[in-house]
Length: 118
Image (cartoon, rainbow, N blue to C red; front, side, top):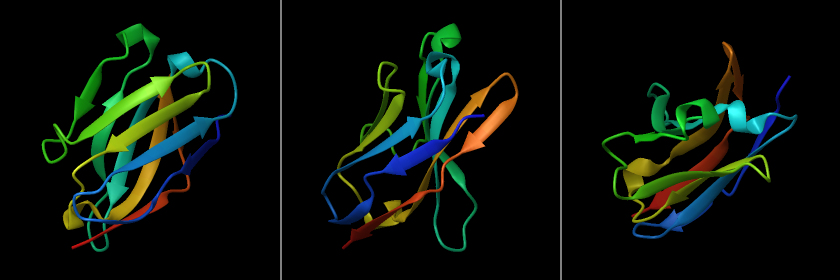
């Protein structure tokens, strides 16, 4: 069983930056495909960015809406995945969730609120 704990959310003005962190319990973190999702009020949860595990050479992918502004990365020595968010916009306001997947098992964190004021 893998537990994911997010941190780093908060309130920031438009144009500002935040870095989210998600730390996983357990071993074999490098095998996990990790991703950040977000869910705004009244909207469906959507993929923001993903970073594959070692079997896929840590390939990354991004939603078009965050390309060139957000960067996903991972530190396997710390069992942590990061989401660096720059040039934030009010439309980035949402609860951000960390997701991990390996061998068909999916794990979710509890979410962290990101609020971007105009």
